[in-house]
Image (spheres, rainbow, N blue to C red):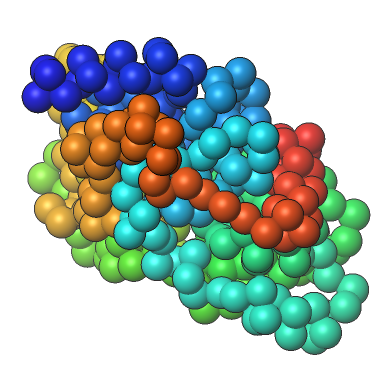
Length: 306
Ligand code: 13P
Ligand code: SF4
């Protein structure tokens, strides 16, 4: 494994590349990344980096967002099969129909969407800034796409907004049930439950803290408790343990895994770099320029309002 990592580092330097990884990636990928972050932090980094090549270890919508924000850069998704089932639950055609139905509404899309959907919306948001973004809009009526759970969380926490949602959801977070939280709380009395807003409402009601992956990580560092119940995908344990060696982390479910996030291997990363070295880069994100520039307006607006 050391040989693979050394070769990746060598080629990364040679091609002025940056490796970005989401917290749900496998530990070997997180260990080799220049930055591990949540969707918001990784989007910001993609917009700000002076690297020529962004190798994005995450799922497709994340690499697409990097390309939308940095069109002049080569953006590579090392494993092109890594998608997000929730992002596939809404299409640009669906948004166009909804716009006819709700002509006076602002359209807010979760960053977990395709470039085509972003291009049809007024502004993007992530789980770290959804309430803030919605509060900053002048329209009272908001169509929030596609996560019904995050949409409901926004509806409950935004000020004086009417939030319309559709039936999208994250198959990994949506299957968590309140009984699992109650069981963990009973087993670990006093342990705070930190949860991602993609979970259903009865799970969120039992939370001591609700936030994005980065926000969960920050909160875990701040709380005094030595045992913490984790309500998000298990990849986050790598950074939770690294940053809090004195704390114990208990997953609310023993099977809290996003298969798509686990698809990217060190070998995929190596193959991507070797293809750059051979001047035949593989798994490069390409977007139609009209769609890209419209989608950029939604992402830029999010970055401005955050
Ligand atoms: P974060 O924005 O919290 O990183 O979440 C991304 C995601 O896909 C959660 O399932
Ligand atoms: Fe998509 Fe859910 Fe996986 Fe996040 S955890 S990438 S929302 S399927």
